[in-house]
Length: 386
Picture 1 (spheres, helix red, strand yellow):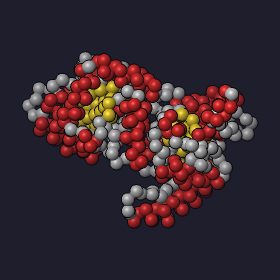
Picture 2 (tube, rainbow, N blue to C red):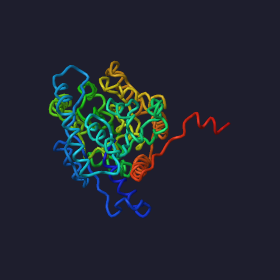
Picture 3 (cartoon, helix red, strand yellow):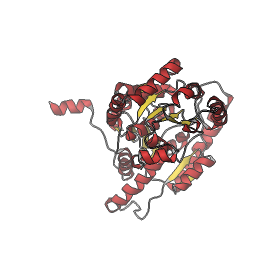
Picture 4 (tube, helix red, strand yellow):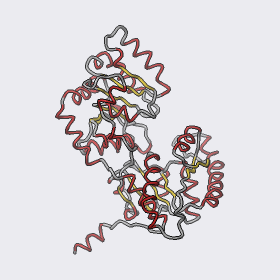
């Protein structure tokens, strides 16, 4: 879940409801803090959002043998819990919003200790390890997919399907203008390839192998991952040497600030199946080919991709079956057959939750003033019908 839309929407909803809040709530201002594992990049990000930051160590439970797991559980986690207790006492927030991940555990436990309501969000179809642990102590749970709520057998009454928030303004960027930003003509077909924040050697290799063929008919924006950029760019230059359309291939390590423009420019997107990426594709109605990460925790990317595939909203290629012929066939199907691409885009509408940020922000404010919303259970619905 991107924090930027949540922070912006919290401020908007707070401003709208200031006069309706109880007297014990300080309505003169809204203080937002980030408590969690901080690195320089994270601190810079939240500073830019005018959010105060406090570093809280946390222990990571790895799914493979590692001596660091023992030190994390025996040292970093206890220290993190103590630090969270100290800082939570000083701040004493009215509500805590937790995205999950190992970094959220100390703060969420401290919140429960002080009886501060916790709003838990899970973007993926499958709950992560930390979120599964915290479902019992959360005051309310929001999820990105209806399938995720179905897993909450014991906590379905406090689980709400909101979808996953996406950055504001994504849909406001015109495609023709976005194409020009990357040096393409408005009429040029554009393929965007994303291998996740770290990149994907498998996807990079497939793109390089198909580059001479694909570049003849389309422009390509390729997000290689920072660690792979130099190698991929050099290999592409060698493959396209003396080619007439060499400038139609645009490799980047990672487009943090311009990813909205890259998505807007694309006619077809090849991507992993992270929840945020899928939410952005649904918002922009982009014809997409999903290649889920097969080593993702709880196999959540494959489960996310399955939701889109079952809805007829995307093509899915299993990483085990990814080859040159299958890759090119799917790209050309979507690029050259408007009817196929339009069907995928139309089916994406049912997976676009336009009010996700506002729903989460409003629920957080309800929890802050002491309300604990509950969803009607299936049994209650049956009784009411009778």
